[in-house]
Amino acid sequence: MISFFRSNIFPILLVNFIGILGYSLVIPILIFIVTDFGGNGFIYGILGATYPLFQFIGAPILGRLSDRIGRKKVLIISQIGTFLAWSLFLLAFMLPETQLWEQNNAVTGQYIMTLPLIIIFLARIFDGFTGGNISVANAYMSDISTDEDRNRNFGKMGASTSLGFVIGPAFSGLLAGTIMDEVLPLLLAALISLIAIFVIQFRLVESVPCIVDTKKVSLKNMRRFFQVEHKDCFTEGSEETQLESSRGFKQVVKIKGVPVLYAIYFFTFFAFSLFYAGLPIYASRILDWSAIDLGIFLAYSSLIMIVVQGPILSMLSKRVSSQSLVIIGALLLAFSFFLLSNKNLMVLYGANTLLSLGNGLMWPSFLAMLSGLGTKKTQGAIQGYGTSMGSFASMFGLIIGGFLFEKIETLVFVFGAFIFILIVLLMFLSQYNKAVPIKTLQPS
Image 1 (cartoon, rainbow, N blue to C red):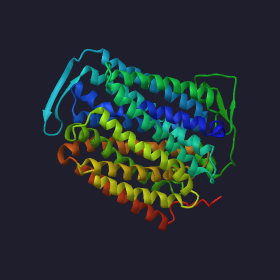
Image 2: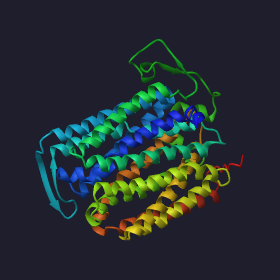
Image 3: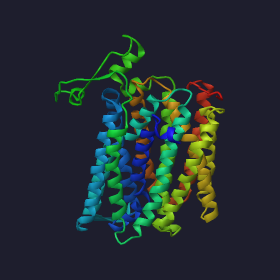
Image 4: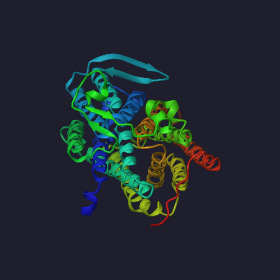
């Protein structure tokens, strides 16, 4: 146990856990905040889509920047942005609920746009643009992983994410029941993001190779501003050199296996966005759940994923290929989404169990596959554009999910199930065409 805390992956796991903890604190209460300030399901969907829209813009920029100036500096930048965004979110509770406009039609439903809601939108915009730290954290994990421990490391990364989702929603439901209502979870989220800045600064070791310090500082370009410059790490004229010189989207998708994995990235996030758009509305309107009930439901899911992504995935990754784990996980997710349309509490928790098993097997295995492509000097770009794929899918998924739930209610989850079946077909197709390099880890 002591050796784990001293290992080279522990700091990035801690950073990831802290970031997810701050984010997950707000998930169970966001729908209640939106409705309290005059919004409805449509506004909730638009607000949810705001973050991934600006993450779609910011993630590739931060990913490429981390290839140039180092993962650590970019993680600090993004975490400072998160802290400022939560501070702006808190400001909304101090402002009067001034009505700006009101709308009621067949598409949007009835809502009132107030001044606090506008401020919350601004907070999500700012946080989204600097929210590329997921792609940078994944690139960092790829930097320090080998083919032998890649699956296990990304499984541990997934477990740290799940642990954050266990503690966050549970604490949020309890804190929201205090005299300070939703303000206390937001204060805690801001404090956690502030702590993460210091953890990155003092615990994280830079992982990007070929970066040397310089003494000259100039505002003429970003590299000098951050006091770094590059050595020539690759042979001139090689594929890595050409990609290093541009690292644009067109160059990244030329890497073998990337287009198929980007498609799976997109569809996975789109399906889960339907879930996250519909579940809070489903819970509050149809199931008549409180924030505590929803927090317990989400915490239960994450608790299972900790077990799956920790010891179970570590064991399976030595015997089963990442491709097979992605297929098995996607099939479990498809079945769980079908069951979510049932309103029986036992069936819902059964669906949640299958969803957690599927997600715990699929997503770390998928990230391990993606991290095995390219080189250390291109992983920031690969992960950054991958995050953009997810953000683009989330943006539309959250809007469409909120809209569809208003029209077809729980059938939106059935639609998500068919998307996971499509992902299974894509994985089989990629293996048949050998579009994705297969790296099966042998038992040690």
